[in-house]
Image (cartoon, rainbow, N blue to C red; front, top):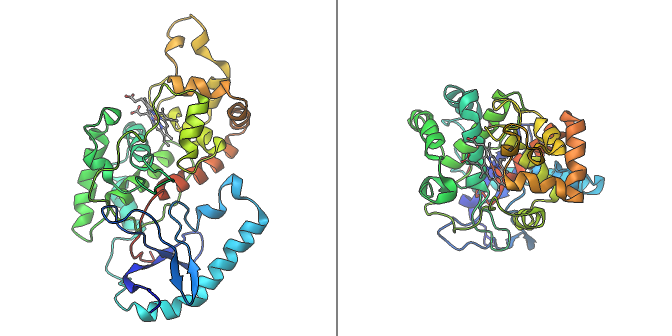
Length: 334
Ligand code: HEM
C-alpha cells in the first residue's frame, strides 16, 4: 500500500471547525528520530514535526494569505481523502474515550491560580527540549523522567498536582502526560485571566528522557536566547511572547497569579537599574536581556501597549510550543 501503515494515521479534531485533517505519526522517541518523507499515491508527503494544522496558519509570521489558502487547500485535500483512509484503518476507535471536555473537567479540579505558575513552567520544561535539527525532544511527557535535573528543580510539585487527575482519567482511558501537561498549562493561563487556548489532544508519551542541555540557561543574553529559540523553530517575536509567561510567579512582574501584560510594562521600566527597595530583584537575567535587543524591544513595546495582541500572539506561540516534536495517535471527536 505504497508504504502506508494504517496504524500511523490519525484524525485530528481542529476544535475551531468540524473538519478533520490527517496527520502522520512520527516514529516513537525510542525508535529512529528523523521524520521521513511519507509516500502516498505516488507523491511524497512530508510529516510535520513541529507545526500542527492549527498553528501552521496561526503564527504572526505565517499570516501570509498565500500560506493560509495553501493550508486550507491541503485541509480540503485531506478531507476529501479521509473516507478512503478511514476505510483502510477500520481499527480507529472514535467512541469510548476521554474527550477534550472530560480531560478539561478532570483538570479543572486541580488547576488553581496558586498552582498555575508551576504548571505553565512545566509545559516549557517538557516542550522546550525540542531541537529542530534532529527532531529530538519536545512535548512528549518525558519531563516525568527528568525531574532530578537541576534545571527542573521545583517541578515535582506540579507533576504531583497532575498525577491525581491523571490517575482518575486513566481509569476511563489512558491519557498521555504530554496531553495532560499541554492542557493543564492552557488551563493555568485561562484561570489566571489570560486567553483561552484550545489544545489538540492525542500526543504520545516518550518512554525515555530527552537529551540534556536543551533548555535555555537564564544567563543567556538576547542573542543567545534568540539562537536557542530559533533552534526550536521560534522567532524573536515568539520568544518575547512566550517569555510573557513570566508574568506569573514571583519574579516581580505584578500580581503573581494574574496573566496579563504587566511583564512587558515592567521590562520597559527596567526597575533592576534602580537601587530602591527590592526593585533590583525583579526579573531573571534572561528577562532583563530582552529589552536590550532592538528586535525584542519592538515586540515588548507592542505587547506593553496592547494586551489583546499579546494574548493573541501568546496563544499562537503556546499552541506551537505544545505541538513541538509531538507524535500523535488517534484522536476522538469530542
Ligand atoms: C526564555 C527563556 C527562559 C528562561 C531562561 C527561563 C527560566 C526560568 C527560571 C530560572 C525560572 C525561575 C524558577 C524558580 O523560581 O526556581 C522561571 C520561572 C518560570 N518560567 Fe521560565 N524561562 C524561560 C522561558 C519560559 C517560557 C517560554 C515559559 C512558558 C511558556 C516559562 C514559564 C515560567 C513560569 C510560569 C515561571 C514561574 C514559575 C513559578 O513561579 O513557580 N518560562 N523560568
